[in-house]
Length: 222
Length: 250
Ligand SMILES: Nc1ncnc2c1ncn2[C@@H]1O[C@H](COP(=O)(O)OP(=O)(O)OP(=O)(O)O)[C@@H](O)[C@H]1O
Ligand SMILES: [Mg+2]
Image 1 (cartoon, rainbow over the protein chains, first blue to last red):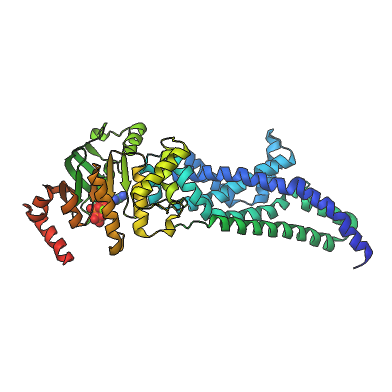
Image 2 (spheres, each protein chain N blue to C red; image 1 turned 60 degrees about the vertical axis):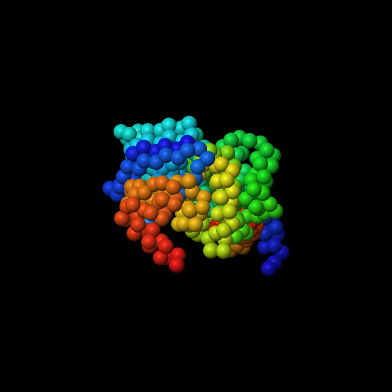
């Protein structure tokens, strides 16, 4: 590799990392956190068959899971402004990814809650707990443990999927690599560099997942 | 303490309780026996409303509930009744993510809003009472079945219920562990706890019960002191069931 290429790699590294810190990582964290709250609400509404809301939740999950994420992002960012609903690119991305996470993770959360035996609910009720108390104190903590592996997978997918935000003009990591590649004419080099950055990010997250699973394995569900 | 009148419960088209009448005075022990599927568990679960009866009435402590005409008690009444009863389950149903002492503390902190320190010291006392001093910080999976069930008893006692409900508390246990659980139950009975116990342990019934109820097919076939019900059943079906039991024990 000649000096010029090495220089390009070094010069482009910080702008990409900066874009990662400014957009990729915040987008991932915010969308995942909001998406998880949404997922829990959707899962409970469906599990408890709350009239009207559970039908709405069902339709929401059906639509989000049945249409491409890219199309959803385009509708939010390019489509909605035509009826007067405008978001800046980052906001549009947050909304799009949150809705996406909410739908996919609601299925994970639902399965995790259902995997907790009826006896746990009954033990909590027999002690005089309300449904909310039983959920918060007894069922969710156990469901969390069950759902850490699948939720981690969905989190890691999200990290990579945020690269799609470049299509709605968010200046995240991939967008920067595209710009650098356009001025340096080194697409192979630059795209490999950004690939390595994603890889590092996902590897770190994988390691965190392992730590978390170990900590949660202190007790075992029978 | 407990007064059940004409209690009915159906699951869909299956009528499981067909008008049960029962009463129990404070400090007495009622043992319910009967063949599988006769409705023993269902009756017990109606007493803390884990199952909602379809008709009849239930008095327990100062709860006075009627289910006639499709009536259902309000949330507050349900919670009040449940706090006044403790239930011990066949499969223990301990909270696996909490230690023994945390299992016992849970309802005191969450339901009764006691401070953690207060709950902890009371829970330690209860664990000592069921013979589990030193096991406070063990998780349920680190305990034997008999120890788990004793934690279950301590947990059910933690909210100071007036009535304790036991659903076959020893039938998931290895035979050598049954004794330690029955011992705790006898001790409770001796202390004057009002207890309703579904069990197949005839020896416990004979020794600890004040009243034995024999259920068959959703109704009470026999009801009376253990000596009468266990030894001289007047009902044909009851005699048949008891013969079956004694044969098994032989
Ligand atoms: N939640 C339920 N839904 C439908 N049917 C039920 C339900 N719970 C119990 N049943 C039925 O009600 C009948 C009585 O059940 P129950 O568990 O009260 O019997 P049991 O006397 O406790 O029997 P066992 O000795 O086997 O525990 C059975 O036919 C059972 O299949
Ligand atoms: Mg039963």
